[in-house]
Image (cartoon, rainbow over all chains, first blue to last red; front, side, top):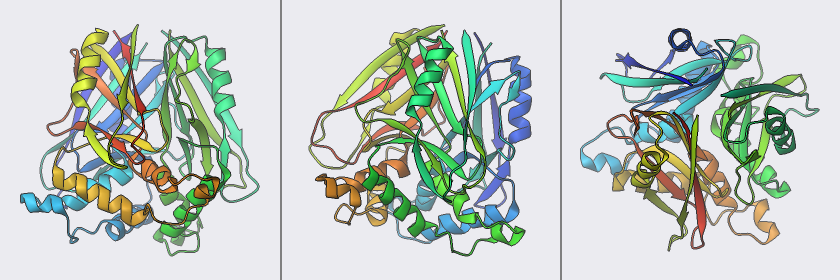
Length: 137
Length: 137
Length: 137
């Protein structure tokens, strides 16, 4: 069994951002040399998500509006009594998920026609990390 | 390490549907010959989910009501300005998730008493796919 | 390829509870002898979650408030017409997720600075289980 590990780094200029990281994950899978296996891609921080959906600007705005409606940044959160201001971001991340697991077949991400891997940032403007872990043969 | 790949196809008559696909996944695990490992089951389309919960008709209606309340099909979505009418389905799929990863032990799905794998369709009436990928030994 | 399986048991005194199970998962990974691989941790019951976020008391209360707001325990659910009273718990569990998959690197959980694994119970006061499955080398 082979394994491979890589970290991606992000520092977004805005508090919230949605970045297509599919090319970086594809490159990591290629570097791993794994032909058949699984790749795990997860946010290493607890106010960010990795998720799979469409790379369409209107949809990204729909997600952002939806998350702000359910857990507004200006809402009241007990977590913020610790001095933090990111209580909303911990909830947004739970709704969008921490991680994706993608099949690797013939050395490629085994994807449907529109699947793209996104990094969802909900408390940016500082350096944060994503983990890529590949296992297989 | 062994690996096995299979696709399932669905074309639901209704826009939204919830289908128990546990028997198909169990059959794929058996065909794989894997005794100890993991099986990934994911929607290959971005307006559908694979999730695990109970096969109870009232609950399926509760999920459908809940998802319609949070992201109604008749709502206003920027994504729909592209000519699509499925902005709601992209949000519903995020809430229910893209994929499940299930342990394989002694050649069987290693499940609790009520766990069943469902395909959640939020924009049906066309041919769509689910990927099953098994790895292990 | 090595594999290892372990179950954790919980019986919470309250209907809802949020328990940090990171030490138990770390111990299982150590027992597995796997140095490079993946660990799947999933609720075996369909009214409970395994998720990763911060171990901060205010945040746990924020999650609980959020879930009660979206799917109140006292709400009306078709599932409850079966005689159950946990329709809300099936929805809460979907929002928080069933499982996490964590990378194992150098024999340890490959975590960012604040990641902690939680068991989220939404219908407790009875014995329930979590599955830990490790695969790798």
